[in-house]
Amino acid sequence: MIADIVYVNGSFVKKEDAKVSVFDHGFIYGDGAFEGLQIVNGHVFQLAAHLDRLEDSVHYLGFSMPMTQAELQELILETARRNKIDNGYVRPIITRGSGPLGIRNMSELGKPTVVIMCQFEKIEARRAKWDKGITAQVVSVRRIPAASMDTRAKTCNYINNILAYLEAQAAGAETAIMLDAEGNVAEAYSSNLFVVKDGKVVTPSLGSILNGVTRRLLLDLCHQNNLPATEGRLSTYDLVTADEVFECGTMAEVRPLVTINGRTIGGGKPGPITKQLHGLLRDMMESGKHGEPIGLAA
Image (tube, rainbow, N blue to C red; front, side):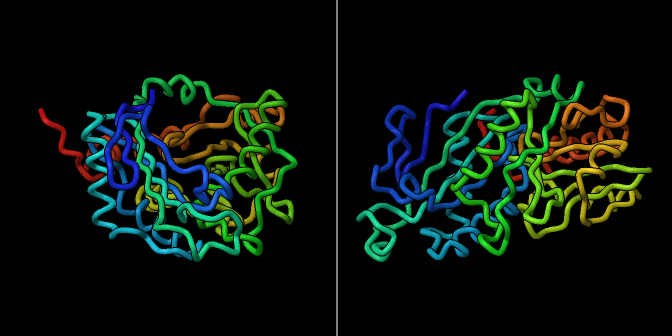
């Protein structure tokens, strides 16, 4: 459920009054960047890491942040406070701004547009998916190569991901697995991927994938808990012969894939390492030690 209060360009407004210009280049061209953050027990999990990536994405797109990272952090926390969200989702969006049509007129745009919105969502709404696992389809839509646009930037242009999801949906699957231009496994349409084989954990190397915050945390957790984990090249063969496959992301957390292209993975149910990593991640999230407190009134 979308929360009632949205921050838009200096003002907190009701969601029905939250509007940006039709001339905004985020709307016209997808010219902007965003982040998705989970709020757990009144804390915004890994807020600093997400804001670092947002700032990098904006810089990569060639315009400047309209405020300091500290100011944006406080606006995110204030938006969550005003909506009284102790568990949910918050999304800051920054676009190049609005002005004349045409890419050649970017220098005439106003200051960047900033929007922050929240959504109520609790873990219980997703736990059933984690308990039984989900289905996946390797799709024909390829991940945009880094030679075209560096995939470490999290931009508002999501057509590539949308087309991948639509193809998987048409095939009756719940998530899409995208390959890179060379046919190697890249990522899911909105998440990073991991494979477990003979007790070893492998995730695709950076190159044609988003450098996910949750992905980095899971690699750290593997190393801290003596689970062999590496980054490398994976093929569809590695997927369908794996003991376990899971995707990870801000709201997906750790979500097991139990069939891929209609073929059963492992025993057809979430595996032990998948469950272990999700438990470790969830402990981090619920502890509050790795997030910024919103400061909700008791």
